[in-house]
Image 1 (tube, helix red, strand yellow):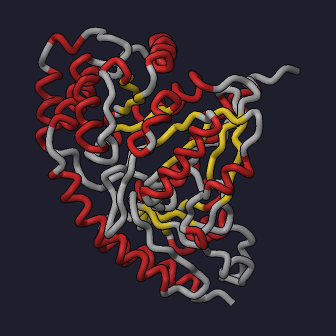
Image 2 (image 1 turned 180 degrees about the vertical axis):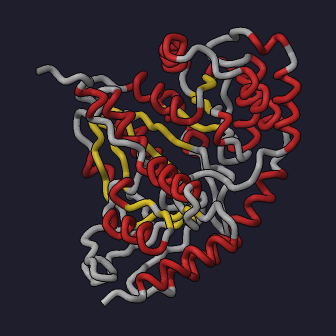
Image 3 (image 1 turned 90 degrees about the vertical axis):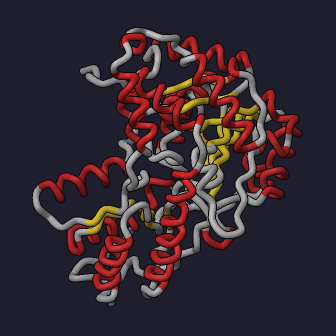
Length: 400
């Protein structure tokens, strides 16, 4: 009997981060005192001036109708201006495609660039959506493993070892989800020169560009290596910078032919992004960065707090992240030990045990291609960090 669901879609793995977050919220709704470290979103409200722009748009009949599938012309112009202001990369408005969040920008990009048999080099740990989107486009993810010893940064030597005649593109992410790793400008430039030398496309996800801490610096690859501009797609959005995850506005910036192809796809897939969200995004990118600067102060404090608390747990090794709002500790020193009558053999087992016994939701490293780790988001209150990590510490303290 033929399968009811296509093999293509049946092969997609559920988003582990969304699944963990949904389970935590369901348990909370049922009255359980669950603390969730699973969600990848700021715990701040969208700034008032952005909300007010959306409210006004709701009352304006212009925005009750279809608009261009590639995005509002004024928003495309504003995104180009914002990109020049924030990263130094100069693009025309025609090179900007407004999408339903960063995820659609990635799907569009991979669909526009990959043919069946093409390979996409993907450093791990990676965000859960990348390999699924690559495979849906007909490509093959080629995983390059990194770990805490390298600060979760891939080297040119590793990338070269993974390159084959079928290599079409590299997925590059800095700051990183899930690790918070930030490549130095020198490392970014070296990787960009390697890609240019071998004619490899770069898909660079810059969604966390403003969330860097301490001495870390965000660097945009096509700015440092201008020769890759014609074989580079930048993916970004308003979600993380402006606390707008639910508004679903992202964009891709790339060469005219790729943007045109992706725009044709989007015209059939979704048409335009919701106009009210686009008007809100216009207010966001046209404004200053005061809101993100305020968030960064809180995130930096929480970053140091959660690293200190996790590092005090025997068997847990927690590098200090330099960007985004995640920590990615190794829990290999805990696996296989007896904890309340169970011996978790994997980080997935351990995450389940932590949720069941400590009522704390974390995402296991299996979701990001690297078993033996946990991802915790510190985009939550200081009190929840202290209480949640305290529960984890008490549970893991029983390991024998």
